[in-house]
Image (tube, rainbow, N blue to C red):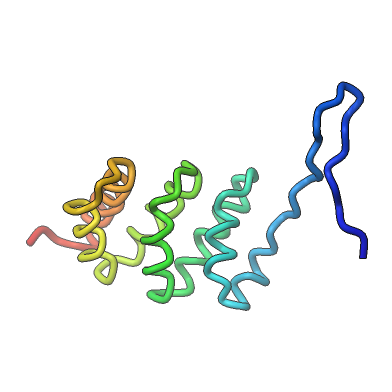
Length: 128
């Protein structure tokens, strides 16, 4: 098997080989939560959307990995995680509240708050 390597273009810049499109169905079948989270960074919006849906469909097992991934600075990933966490509902409530109140990372706090706001707006969680 040959390994793909970066090649120099005519102008001397390094050109990376194209990134392999993630196989969302395979990742879901294998319950590859980390792989689905990484797929949410992919350039194609459809891939990101299907990865988010696949994560949600895996249920509560994705909660901790998604919460940890909120620290990532990739905006596509964060938006997808906000959606997934908001759809998980009650199991995500306390961990998200903890991030909002304790995280030193402003962007992480804002993402957690957005997920909470979406839960409230969709009626998944009622004000206590």
